Length: 120
Image: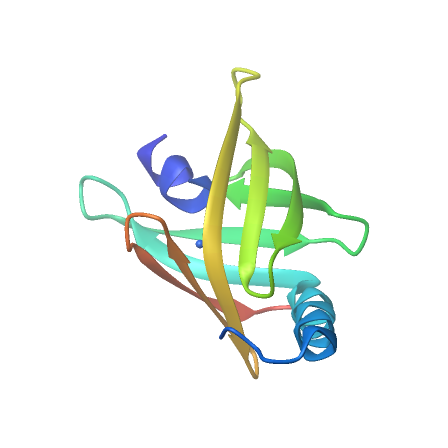
């Protein structure tokens, strides 16, 4: 569960129109499937696959457990996610995001950095 909370727990512009365009660009860039390799508390590697859908829904696959949720952009570079855990509880996370080519860089409020590669 710690790994799940790590994932679900990641440029001031002068022209308002440019900020809106940048937000739209990030939204378009995020749509798709992304994969990261993390380590659990026992230092065993595992993969996380996150799919951001164009309609604001998302799905996170952690060790074969699929967690539904929603996502939206706040400002021009912050993703706010709400994920439903297996016990039905919801968890919300804010992460700074940046897409460069097929790499998604995310950083959560604690400074934890995540690197995802596009797979679809």
